[in-house]
Length: 188
Ligand SMILES: [Zn+2]
Ligand SMILES: [Zn+2]
Image (cartoon, rainbow, N blue to C red; front, side):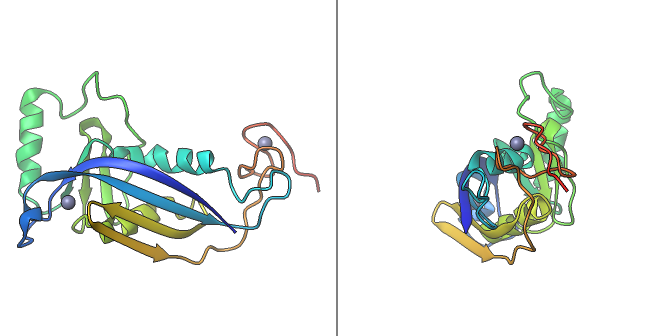
């Protein structure tokens, strides 16, 4: 069965060299739907607690929220970094606190200090799904990702590998047989 959760992300981007209005900088509220598949954990009668899926995902994905997302070859990138540097906010500001853990994958690099994500490919809804899967595939048993932004939407199915050992009391994944939340220890 599947546990399904949604996350909202507000971001600015543009499609560099795209011959439509999206070549201009603009913003969206994007909605990411994460479907996690596994057996139903009989202890809690859940596949996985949705608030825990959100927590795991949000830890890295908050880097996309209230952020600017630009392709690595976009000339806006050095121009904006130059303005941020001259303004003294390139390496952080006291009000910039909602920072996720910095990450770097094949497809995207996050710079939480200046709320910027630099991507290898254009950040379409399809591109976002590829980026999110790279970031979360080792943390969650992802069966499907859907991303919508304005009138655009894309979805991709995945085959989750195996089952995760979960706490029968709180439902979250055990680490070396121990629940990081309540301390439950798996026997044998
Ligand atoms: Zn757009
Ligand atoms: Zn527990």
